[in-house]
Length: 250
Image (cartoon, rainbow, N blue to C red; front, side):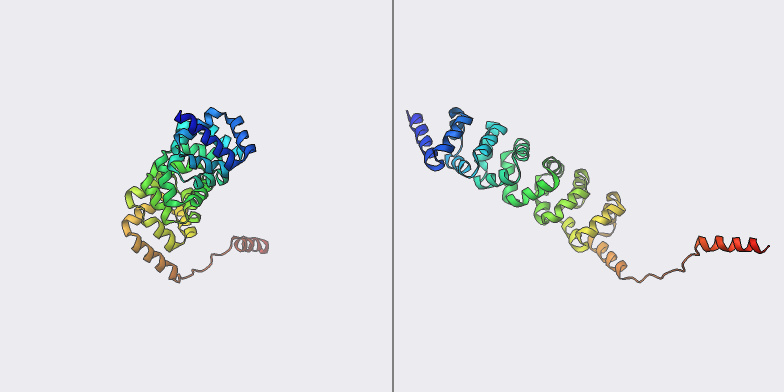
C-alpha cells in the first residue's frame, strides 16, 4: 500500500512540476515501469531536477543510453546540475562512454577536483577515449594533480604532445610537480617545441642529469649568449660562373 501511495505522489509531483504535456510524453516514451523503477532507486528530487532541466528527448535518451544500474549509481553520486551540464555541453554519446568506463565514485572525485566546465574542455580537446587512456596510464591521483596544476589550454596541448605511456613514464620517474613548472618557465609553446625537437627519450635524461633548476638556468644562459657569426660560405653559383669565364678566355 505504501508503494502505491508513493507512486501516486510521485506521479502527481511530476504533473505539478513538469506540466501535463511533458509528463505524459515521458510516461508514453519511457513507460511507467521504467520511469518509476528508477524513481524508486535514486533520490526522487534529483530525478525531478533532471526532468525539469532536460528536454523530454534528452531525458529519454539518457535513460535509454545508459544501463539502469550504471545510471542509478551516476545520479546517486553526482550533482544533478553537473549532469545537466554534461548532457548539454558534452553530449550523451561521450557521457555514455564515461559512465560505463569509470566507477561513479571516480566521476564524482574528478568532478569535485576539476569542475564540470574544465572536464568538458578536456574531453572536447582530447576526446573521451583518449582522456580515459591517459587516466588509466597515469592513474587517477596523478591525472587529477596534473589537470589541477595546469589550465585546460596548457593541459590539452601537453597531452597531445606526449603519449599516455610517455606521460606515465615521466610521472613515474620525475613526479608531477616538474611538468607545470617546466611549462611555466619555458612557456608552453617553447616547452612543447623542445619536446618535439629533442624528443621525449632525450628530455628525461637531461632532467635527470641537470635537474629542473639547472636546466632552466642553462637555457636562460644560452638564450642570453651572443654567439659569434662565422664568415658566410661562398655561394655555389659564383664559383661555377667563375670557372665558366676561365674556360672562355682560353
